[in-house]
Length: 131
Image 1 (tube, rainbow, N blue to C red):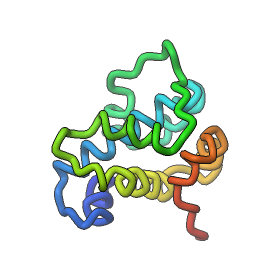
Image 2 (image 1 turned 60 degrees about the vertical axis):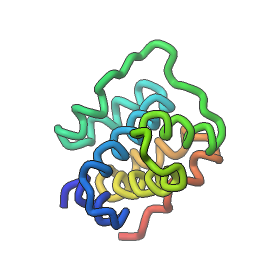
Image 3 (image 1 turned 120 degrees about the vertical axis):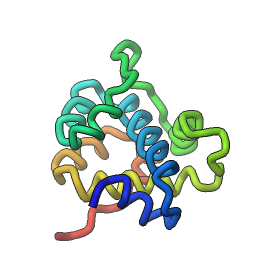
Image 4 (image 1 turned 180 degrees about the vertical axis):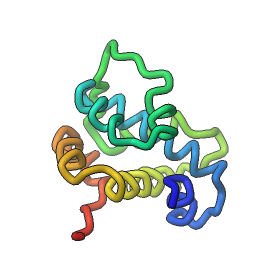
């Protein structure tokens, strides 16, 4: 199942036009919060199409951005979403994208990413399900 279809299903929206901006906004915000080396390691594990929009608009200067709190991270995601995206759905969108990453990225890489994030942001990331 493609990443977008998984997000459509998880969000019960059945709308690829909503799933795509969710995926982009969360991946860009996460990428910009990570050390560049870790961001590149994550990018290497993404499917080619997802990798393309993951790197879109990325500039290394000033990275990583230092969002320390959950609300800071959610606000940055919110800024990258379409204006009509419901504020109350932003946290759910982040959790769902993180869940997709859990299912498609190696456990070791997920652990490295989570370890790099402050506790407040890490709380948004669902615990990986046992295989």
